[in-house]
Image 1 (cartoon, rainbow, N blue to C red):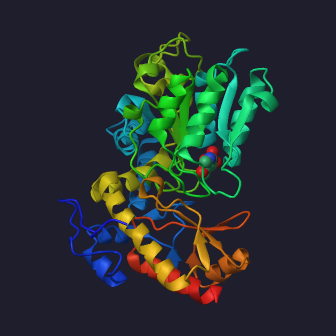
Image 2 (image 1 turned 90 degrees about the vertical axis):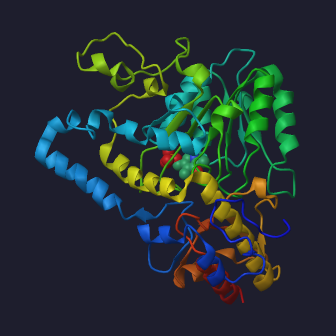
Image 3 (image 1 turned 45 degrees about the vertical axis):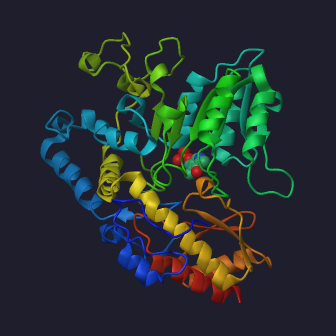
Amino acid sequence: MPELWSAPPGEGWSAVIDPRTATAAELDAADPLAHLRDEFDLPDGVYLVGNSLGALPRAARDTVGVEFDRWAALGVEGHFTGRLGWKNYHELVTDQLAALVGADATEVVAMNGLTVNLHLLLVSFYRPTPQRHKVLIEGHAFPSDHFAAESQIRQRGFDPATSLVTLDPRPGEETLRRDDILDTIADLGDELAVVLLPGVQYYTGQVMPMADIVAAGHAVGATVGFDLAHAIGNIELNLSEWGVDFAAWCTYKYLNSGPGGVAGAYVHQRHVSDQDLPKLLGWWGTNPSTRFAMATEFEPIPTVESWQLSNAPVLPLAVLRASLDLFDRAGGMSALRAKSERQIRYLDRRLAETLHGRVENISPQAMEERGCQFALRVVAGKGRDVFRALEEARVLCDWREPDVIRVAPVPLYNSFTDIDCFVQTLDEVVA
Ligand SMILES: *Cc1c(COP(=O)(O)O)cnc(C)c1O
């Protein structure tokens, strides 16, 4: 653990507030972001499941309401009228999403759903040859990612039995070791076409060593992509600088865009104008100034927007805008992460003080390998009963088979008091 919990200057935290000794009330009082909680409508009880579905930003009722009003008043003219013209509506979130993933605006677009985007990007970045045809994913990949990789392999006439390689923790271990990931990539060598790993693992909460994985993948000539479903809005990302080839994410988890919200995609600058990349085409990827001339000559937009197929879903994007404004008001991911690290330390401490080893956190210990999500296992078994009892007490977290309770204090709206309530309730139900 770090020595005294002093804040970097400019973040508004008092240097004397140490989450290893302070009370929840003291930490909440010192929290420069505490007021943002009032910008959300949270379910009754303690909501600690923003890793699964983020909370409703209150302003979304207005941002969506504006689009209803525009639709009612303008009808189809809404596509072309004013700053909020729907034809360009997706552009309104580009800069904010680019800031969250550490990319240039030309590298980021909001479109489709996450799994759809993984498919579209694999069409471009998985170009198997008889020599180089393997895709590396994790053995515990989110099923949708596994299905996407498996079906892409079949689609190209290869066999997942020989082309899909999975990476698992060592026997008896919960998380992947950095060196095991890098060695596996090096061993696959010139048979490896694509590395597709999560930025943050959905079950254990482990943050992957993304920059190292990119370097290892590129060293053997593979492309490297990340699924950022659990990373965006949770940890700081630097996709461009790390040289990540492609990435995709959903926005209904830490980005609070609501159920089924619009996903995002990223393609590195060096690929966005590459005409040799195979790509599925649609009218939203072609030059907007000739789009409505209805010509059938495809003129790719010289950004990642050339991967767009359909016109953008304006109402879900309106919700996302309300949420992204709150990330700006928070001061961006560095300020949120500064709070998140304090919340992580505080929850660590309260579990140690209160549960005395009756609950084990299988997330990594090192701060650089952790996001805000904890993966807790009840040592005496009966985790599912404990989870149900928490739900009955209106302490909302989530259950993932086979035996983990996931709990995520989200710095944008969760308080230290929420964390304290969780631990006290957990203590009661475990006993
Ligand atoms: C949440 C999540 C998904 C969900 O996929 P959708 O296409 O948004 O339904 C996929 N992969 C991972 C890793 C996730 O965490």
